Image (tube, rainbow, N blue to C red; front, side):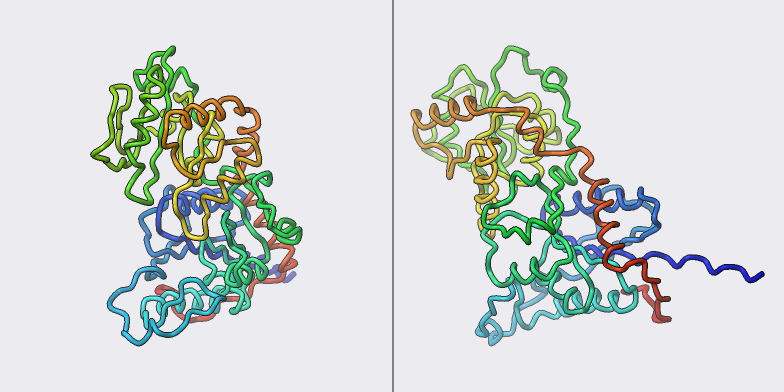
Length: 391
């Protein structure tokens, strides 16, 4: 009796990861680990400008380093910047050999690996590249003013959209069709196992009865300005104000003794869990941990492309999860108004419902289901004899 041929290996998944910050890489690692745990044997090839930012990848996962799509390797030929950038792309400068090599690496892999999906986190250009190469793509969805043709092409052409936040935080300008093909995974890639308030305070040396306000300054700029924090601390002398991250010094700031700067710390989960009030921007990791901790939150967005943090702060306010301010209050009466408003509207149960601890395994199952629906278990052809060692 003739032996049956073994089942062909499932098509792999490609994954482009923006190398700036830690959120994209941590999200990718969580998804890849969860895909590995499904037991399907599907491999993942990661493409990124850095290969040292991924924590705890499972065996068999390969990271291919590509040139940055956002940083030139040398001077741009002077005539190139005079050519208008079309509305269908965001970052497509001319004359960059690094971009050519990066795109060639990915397209060569498309041709030889015959992938099931290409995930883009995040680049509208990589998403569109996959579509042009006849590879179905999943675009990671971010908040922001993204109704431009470039984002629309990436979203409309996607087989699915992956949102690392809850459906309650969807923007009202997103169409029903767009929402219908979005998988919402609040807290994806973020450690949500925060300690209790008592345990966190014991480790930090904070007395149980102390009132603590935590100010988190993101790493995307020069840091939060010191002057408004001085006003806040003087307005609430019974609260201990602690900042983490960069703080921009102001010569005119009058700083009381209940304001202290901790700088960059490695125990952010403890800091958030120990706080009675959080003042922070709306970066992905910070937002998920504040929601998981269920703390009163004054959300002050930082500048980001396409007003990403502004729109996320608005979404959080609509969901009743945070008080949104455009900037830090500039007077004592506005600080009182903000703090009292954040505490009055605080609903920890509502906050905690916006994140889920099974976000990664749920995302992996969704991706597997999407791949099966797209390919209907079509056999994966043998790869070509081309050497893939450099692909």
